[in-house]
Image (tube, rainbow, N blue to C red; front, side):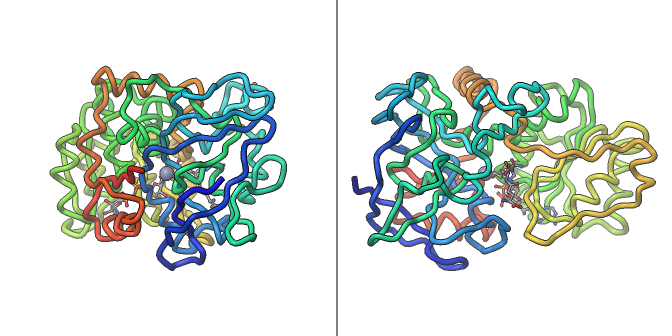
Length: 369
Ligand code: NAD
Ligand code: AHE
Ligand code: ZN
């Protein structure tokens, strides 16, 4: 079949909206009509050529929601008409990682996914006879896409596509990092670095679990109002702090935070986030994705004295199990999504979504097909 898609032909070039060819679903695969997709900073990072796994030409996008239109042989868990959220972290429930109960990082198809291919080692997309790579196993910047069955979370039919697509990455990543990765307890002091589409979800997750101080840190003053809307109690702009930002945050949190979260992808900020943790027990969670070649560093003494550095992918959530529950949290009013969707665009306007993100003017832009 033919489908409209925004193709990343080259790094650092705007996406081009063209009609591509899409092969139907093979064994264990599903054809999904994407109804809406968010634009996450990770898409921008790959498009900017900063992802060590970045491939071109490819169809980016990993934060979608849609409807199953056709299933391939052997598919049993979804059927045409089901509403689904594509999962860049699938859940096969059979691999060593899934069975461990210790991680959400299913390994069933990670190798081919990282090469921009379906599990059989081929692509379903092509343009003028040349293959186009998939992206993060999702490629939601295409109106129709093919995914493995294990990479689809079936969700309730009454959840609107244009907001629930955000649960496909940003919401789950931020809220999950609080609830699942850090397991923040009521009364804890939390510092969140970077108040964008991910950081604001960390903030609302921290409020939901009853954190005490929720300190937001951002170099963009306009983010203060956003943070306060979702539960932030204190705002710090590092550019306006006299002296050392870490000492400032340690003083603000009575000796250091119980939990800190990096939602910037900046490795210097990651160090600040670790060092702003309380001696003896503070936990710092790296969420931000850093540019290829960047490394983190700190004095080992920071760890010897009890601070813990950990990371979180997709908020530690097991997609097929947890995503439908997070959709319920949204539909029941436990978490908010609608106000964070600052811009709704057509596919033809998708490059504007990247511009707004780089200008710091959006929280989330959503493309509605
Ligand atoms: P975004 O562009 O919406 O927000 C980033 C925020 O960080 C902005 O408000 C910006 O002003 C702020 N910022 C930038 N530099 C800063 C600094 N030095 N100090 C303080 N604040 C600073 O991006 P997003 O969509 O929220 O994504 C945030 C990061 O999370 C990205 O690196 C993205 O790739 C990553 N991410 C990771 C996962 C995961 O599963 N681990 C999932 C989604 C996104
Ligand atoms: N490909 C990059 C790493 C990118 C990365 O860390 N991705 C996150 C999700 S970001 C969503 O916006 C993730 O889930 N990572 C786990 C995984 O298996 O990819 C690189 O540096 O090579
Ligand atoms: Zn993302």
